[in-house]
Image 1 (cartoon, helix red, strand yellow):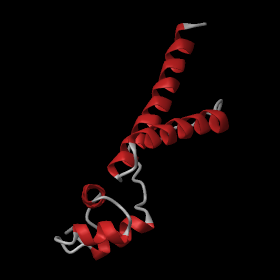
Image 2 (image 1 turned 180 degrees about the vertical axis):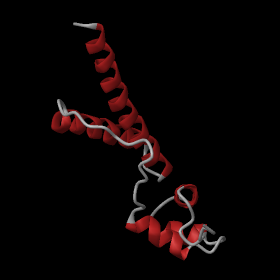
Image 3 (image 1 turned 135 degrees about the horizontal axis):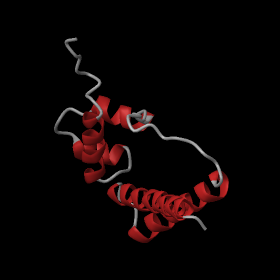
Length: 116
C-alpha cells in the first residue's frame, strides 16, 4: 500500500473513533449509562462505515449545525434559574440542560442581535 493510502486509512479510522467517542460523551452528559452510551457510539461508527464507506466528501470546517427542536424549546423556556424544572420536563439531567444552554450560546445566542 502506498504511503498516501496508509495516511488516508488512519484518517478514516480517526474519524470513526471520534464519532464513537463524541456520541458516547454526549449521551453520558445527557444522563445515559456509560456502557449503553459506549454501545450507541460504537453502533453509530459502524453504521457510518457500512453505509458511507467508500464515499468521498468534504465536511466544511465552518459548518454550523442546526439546533434541534428540543434544544430550541429548552432555550426558549430557560429563564436563567429553572435548570431543574427543564431537566424534569425534558427527561434529562441538570448537567445536560447546562450543556444545551452552553452549546446554543456558543453558536451565538439567537436572541442577541448583531449591530452590523
